[in-house]
Length: 497
Image (tube, rainbow, N blue to C red; front, side):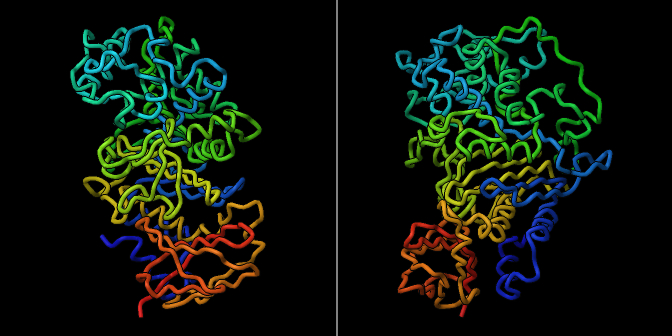
């Protein structure tokens, strides 16, 4: 399949962007990748810069995706689960380096390392040594379907009914990154045990409702089920296929908080719209406060963004080059070539998701003051999504990221309190072959060019002119630092001879 990136290069080199728009390029991405439905929301600073919807949320009823469409966002839910845990940290209810056994009703240890504590910090950064072994899937089924919800100890202790030896890696806690769903289930159970509340209630009351979000981890909490998207694989419904009929509410009157938070699907079951997910990202981008509500303290958000683990080649499973650095409940991208690239040259923080045909992304770039939300509810006419050509993301995700980078970097173009737009900086000529000039009232002290593979190239600048002859033909994001400390982003198209 011809990639969107190739089309970008062709169109931009010939027409100087005059014939294509962000909307038309996203339309092309949706068509090329056979997407059932998609929502994209991009913010710059405090403002929503772009809202885009494509296709259907419900094929059977011919209902389109729109602003109100909610999706089961898969693993991005893990980040929201972590936000709930960090909210408890702000309340002084526990310490990150607490042994989890201080808060659980059972003793949790890796049997290979019985004397090594597992801490809350390690749970939030996927460094517990706990994995989704064979027992996890039977336990998950029993959690949702058995007459009595089993205790989490039945999965995580050797004497448990669902325990299997592969629930733990052969690595001591704190030494190895192993991304897993069960870590979020453990996190939700800890949240319940510490707070004394059910996980779904705590998140709704303390995180979602203060931000004005009507979504929930429980389907029966949603006010309009027709707005909930069905999830599709090759056009066939896979999940949330309620067709307007609410499921019978579960009787949780006997449920004891702190026994099995897995029941509420903290690893993947949050239903929110793209705009609501954008509000969560804006809360993170604004240091814990958004829509007039303070969910987290600024220092706590900083803790979430601070790397707890960075891949060194042997200290974890980097998930096919997608996960190379992790904070507390949140991924940190490093622009690894062929890997974790959202905005070339920028470190982004957020999470990706995938389940039942849905793929989703929510990322925040402090350098660009930009948040990006992408939710795709399924596909048709193929076996599955193809992998991207330039990154570890799937092709439709990569195509959407490329479109955003192509059209919106100028709109989110400063990390300074001074508006970059005030500089009226232009790059000329553009497209260019050998040299470009920066038409700007300030001197450019540093210039780098990032390509779509995540590679950064330092440009040699003399005065306000840079030599680009060594760059290969393609599209680049220029990062220009001025003498007053303003960083400006601009697109550059480098043509061949």
